[in-house]
Length: 138
Length: 138
Length: 138
Image (tube, rainbow over all chains, first blue to last red; front, top):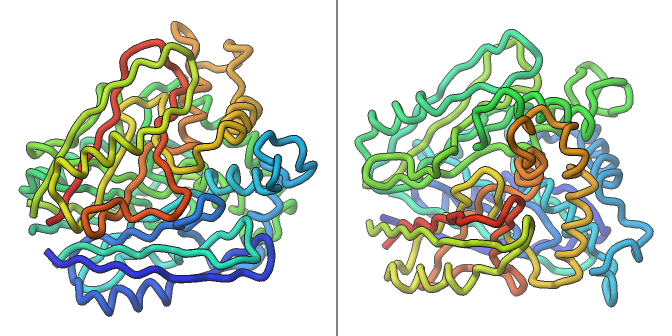
C-alpha cells in the first residue's frame, strides 16, 4: 500500500469565498503515483469547508445568499461563541457545506462525474489556512 | 490491497425521490471479495445525494417537506443559477443531505447499525444519473 | 494492509448532547498500530452524528439553538414519522451535522489542524448507542 499527503495553503482576502481546487488535487494525485485507491480532501480549519459541486458563478452567489439566510453573520451578538470572536456563523455554515470529501481513484484519475469539481469554501478568511490531501492505495 | 468499482445507473421518473440502494451496494461488496476495508458510495451528479438513514416512508415525506422549506424550488427566479436551468434548489438540497457515505467493511459485510440503510437522493430526476461504489481493502 | 475496528458505546442521559470523543479515537489509533492510512468514525444510529468542530461550550450552545430553529422538535405532530415515536427532528438534525468523519492518519497520529476535535452529537439520547471506529492502512 502506498500513502501520500500534502497540505495546501490558502490566504483568502475576503471573509467568504469559494475556490476551485480541482487542479491542485489532481496534481497531488499525479505526484502520489497511486492508480487505485481513495483520496481524502479536508479543511484543516473548523470555519471552512471542502465540498464538491458545480463551477458556476451564479450558483456560488446562490450558495452565499442561502447560507447567509440559514446562518446569518449579523447580528454577531446572537451567538454565544462570539465573545472575543465574530465567526460563529462560519462554524455553522461549514457544517452545512461539510468538512471533507472522499473521492475514488481509478486508473490514476479522480473518478468523477461530468460536472464534479472540488471547492475550498472559506467562511472566515483574511488569514492563512490549510487543506489536507491524503491518498492511500496502490 | 484489492480494489473494486462499479457505476450504478438510475432513471428516476419524478423530479425528487429517495431510493433504497442497500441491496445493490451489498451486491457490489460481494462481487469485490473484499473482507476488510472501506467502501465509498457517492453520487456522480451534483444535484443528487447518497446518504444513510431510515427506510420509513413517513420520514421520507418529512425530509421532502423539510428540504423544500430550507431550499424551496419555487420561485425558480430567486436563484441566479436558474438562467437556462431550474435546478438551483437541487444543488442546495444535495449539500444538506450530502454527496457520499463511507462505510466500514468488516468480515465481508457492511458494518452497520440496526437501522442503517443507504439511499440515493434524487433532487433533479427524469434523466439517467449515476452512483459510484468504490471499495478498497483485502 | 492492516485493519482495525472498535465500537464505542454511549448512554447520554439527556435527549441532546455533544461529547468530545477525540481521546477515545486516538486510543483506537494507538491500539491499531497503523502509521499511515484512513480512519472512519461514524454514528451507528440514524439519530446521531459524528462531526469535527471546536470544543467550545458557547459554540455548542449556538449549535443547539440553531439546529432547533432549522429542525424543531416541537410540535412533534408536524412530522409524519412521529406516529409511535417523537424523534423525527433528530433524523433531520443528524443530516445537517453529518453521520461520519474520515480522518487522515500520518506518522501514527490523527492528521489534524490546530482546533479540530471529534464529537459525538446525540439528538435522541437516554439509551445506549454506538459509534464505530474503522482504520485501514499500514
